[in-house]
Length: 427
Ligand code: MEV
Image (cartoon, rainbow, N blue to C red; front, side, top):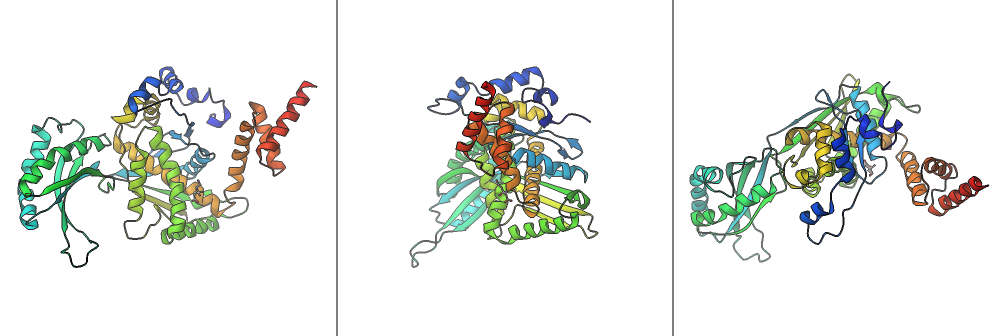
């Protein structure tokens, strides 16, 4: 049987994953101070987090090691465990839409809303052509303006007697190729704004992308064999029913949905971070989309098949991630992360990310519906406490096991145990 990552030391894992020596060196070096200084203002340092790799992912028939940057113990292991359950049912099936983002231009002070709307609609082919072929600041090999849409937004003012003003909002639809696209779209919205003012006689205020990128979606489904869910304490079908009950809870209660979705984002954010993408954008979109029907609800859904042989899971989320530009291009570890997964397009990356979200959610609600999550959490927490107390090497596990056995996972106790160990070694 081939070795698992947990069977070897941290320094042996890159070799086991087949990461070449250049990429291993890049992982070691990470982000240089010079790069950091060019990335943000007033940089004083870089800030490291662990990068782990979740195993067992099969996505659209391909085995994909998943790089995850996360500070929370058990996320990586849980994710790999869930992916193994899913692999037993053939792995994840993932798909995505074209990577279309929305830019917004806010137009106010219009004398004639209908005429302004008609003028923009009429000029739309010309404006798109201008953006794509004539305006140097918006001609891009990654992005292409594909459509203009117009929305009228009634504004509810504080004064009931005042006539309700309406904003005219131009949506600039952009195909972003392999870029996340924020800069491309913002540039285009700013370039287009004076032309929109001319056409409408109105005044433009904001010109910015919308992070509710619901035209850029990624979806995944999976079928876990019910038999694979069997534990020592519970048969697979009982556990599957409990998982469905957990899903229904999150589908119907925003308090539970928030925690459920936090679990989904544990996986999603970790890959978004590992690839140098904008996790705030991904978070904002995912949560806004989860509230699209007027009540915040779960991002995933789990059901048992009619023949009761599989537990079916699904996820469908906006996913604005890129593989070119920004920190993804600059950060050496992000480049290695992309190569490790073997993704070659932004869409492929988005598809991988939603699979990880679905797996992470399965891991969490499976554990919650079975043994609870504290047992697994406590052993990893105990290791962290042991490390914080100064333990290293084999002593980490020794101290952690003792802390758990005594049910006293506390720093002072770990320090005492470590001091006792050191004393024994000396005598
Ligand atoms: C903890 O980081 C995430 C969970 O709370 C998610 C959930 O409750 O589904 C375990």
